Image: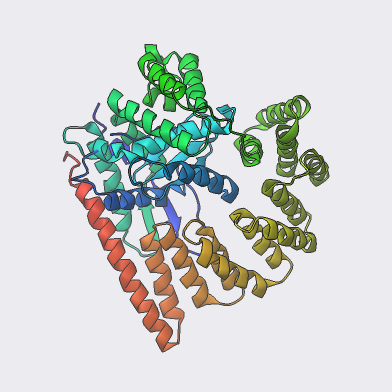
Length: 502
């Protein structure tokens, strides 16, 4: 079925490029995975640029989870798998999506969204890695690019419609607004037109299984999660089973192929990381909902805390602490936090961050700083802890220390955690560093691919600066950003031209 271009460009997102933040106005939509590729028409660099353009809008989608802990964990699993991909892949970037449906989806250029529903369905880390490995398999085999550009495929029309809306955003009449679309929803619409062939699915199965094994995960996890999805939804008979299942149809033939390949591999005894269980508990609380849903979540976590032992019990207690913090009952939150620490004396960065969050909620900045200092010393590469440390420093009135720390971390993490630049910019703006604030906000937008927004911030910085050398630097930066913006517009125009007239 061809998608009408006017229907596809149905939702619009506006985002203000000012320092206070970005409002989200898109409607949540279910998210499948994208499809099959003609590398002659869509190079890896072009595919990455297209993915970045979609993600600029996607980060404004209300289902996008802006959580450094979760997204760093998912990305680390993805990159661990991708290191064993059969072909070169772009830097894998994974992010959480607040949606109870069992689903994961791949955007152009290696951006992969993971629904909360999928995380909660997985009963082991190897099961989660199995689904992610399958998605990365599609990236490695360039199924996405081929599916977008093969002549005669309806997906090209859907992609063109999405690009048309993005071009309209880049050409917004004023410099302080960019118009876009409900990006994840449109990506899902494209995906529904890009049905993978059975051969493509088999390729992704085999590539994903090999990555899973070579990365050290238990390959049986992939068979378990796929088998459970297949049985639950009767996929062989085409009767649904959720977005991921319906767009990744399992067959007895493919399942048998996977099981035979697993049988030929040496046995792997993989122990789930503590991160998996703690973040799975956090996701359960994040998924939230109305008061009844929250009560159900509380009861589920209570049952797990009683029935499970070790890290699983600690994670359930941690989830209960997160639940009570969400409900702003700090006494209960602290009580369950203490119980979780007692159940898992080895400690975990998630537990450490929760303690900082409770201290910040209590307005006890000195305790928050003390806890954060100890945490970043033990886990120096955990970005969420670093952000919490900077927040605690600012709350304690140590603004200069917070800014110095953020500047150091921006150099180290800025590419993977652009929120560091945003946090630094807001701190500089409050302390009177108007030019520096706008320069750092421009860096945030550059790191997220929002070139029009970056240009606007640099223009503001240029107008506020009175230093000749600084103005010259800003002029050079602005020229570079405008060139990148034009390149992006040219790329999107290529697809826009495919939209049928009338």
